[in-house]
Length: 496
Ligand code: FRU
Image (tube, rainbow, N blue to C red; front, side, top):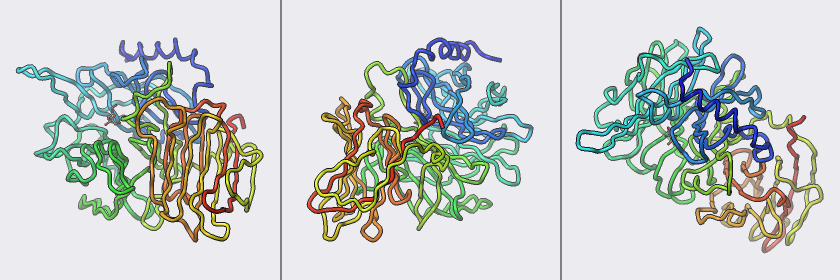
């Protein structure tokens, strides 16, 4: 049954979405129909296609009572819009259908698991929030909320767990059919924990174990967990609030963590071995993965950061977009991410150069644009050099640059002059590992975004750049010496 609230949201989209020209959207990154989006939800396989839902407030470009928007794809590049899937229309989710996940049931239906939020005033007048886990089942377009909702409440939590911060279930199925889900939570000292729940049928759930937790060293509340095997290891992803900066690995504020270790599924024991940043840029949060039909582990995230989510272009009609889906693997004990290979089918015009000697600043004929996939390899031309700089989205007024200083092995991305009018963080620095003095930078740009992959995906760094599209110049610059660069640049063409 379609509730009044859900119908309203669908009607609102139908009425106003046609007024938003395609030119206001990126070419191949997912955006909401209209209004605001945040986290990716329910990124999963269903009936031969890939579905993606998202946190959605259609009525304005600000966060509000959360709905679930919905799109699907066959190749992670071209997406088809589907009707709004969930609205906050019951007592237990009246203040929002928060983040969650999805899977295909044996009978062909699709199960969504999400966090239902409701607020209640206590007897002494305090407005308390409750977060519970809920289920909805549908056919890939329309969903019924389960009459037994909520399926997990504060009463199911181990002692000391927060009832208020209990959200973002990520569900999967074991080979023996057991349903499992990891959920974000907060412990007595206010820091993050990831809890494991189990179910025989996807409807009746119980607490099974604490997978991992921190003691304030990796932020406070751990949001949006994901937990999956990868190349013989087990990976736990989470997005912590209130991180403390640590060297150049972690920055203060909203972070994205990747914990790599071993998992004994029977004993329900995760042994953490390594902790790293999941992305070294500014605009990346709430990542979620799926296992594709061909076995690849693919990740997508919200290409935004809560701290700067109020810094919106004047009169924007949609706000928020997803990253490009990325293929994950593990190399030398680190998480590696690269754009899905399907992107290559959309490679258009190519410009390529090798061994270009760069001293000072130079442009290369055919190398410009704002929708592109470009790989630049840099090495010293004989002696040492002070810095190499790649300037993009550039004109007389604007520039965003990626600067590499070989002496410190540090990359600095600076978008202070991208055209943004807000006094928020615009610079990120991070440590890289050149190979034999050589550094490889792959850059995917889609109008107002820039995703950087260093050394074949060893590190990724994601940025939104609010630069007018006419600023499309790219230049190569050497400071304090000379470098040799190889460049291979493709325009991306979705009409192909
Ligand atoms: C993370 C988050 C989630 C929550 C959702 C609400 O970005 O705070 O924890 O479910 O956003 O929109």
